[in-house]
Image 1: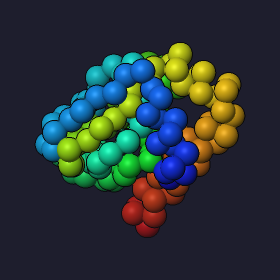
Image 2 (image 1 turned 45 degrees about the vertical axis):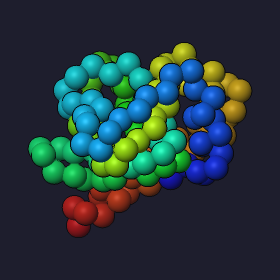
Image 3 (image 1 turned 90 degrees about the vertical axis):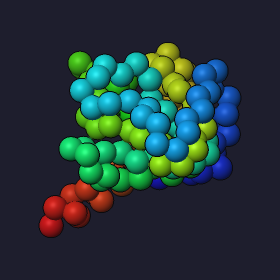
Image 4 (image 1 turned 30 degrees about the vertical axis):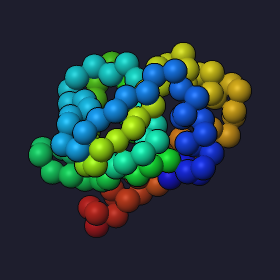
Length: 124
């Protein structure tokens, strides 16, 4: 997980803020992604085959694969578990944050690594 206080301060400066009501789909598996999201408020369920495999909390990010994968297809469906306030970051904004705040990249990698480890633990 990202350092919540630091991450939220970066997210709130994002130019594109979205509000989602509980139960709304943010994106669907297999669709092309153009942005990643930072959770400013609320929780987001990540789903595969109709099952929740993780819940993203305030201060963390999701959908980052859209900015680093080719093709940028979504690997899961994201659904607002609660009412959410999300900061959308496109590739340009992401690169800017990485250049201006290098620790941001490490925090995103740490978040991804933590989530991958948790997923692997469920397979054991």
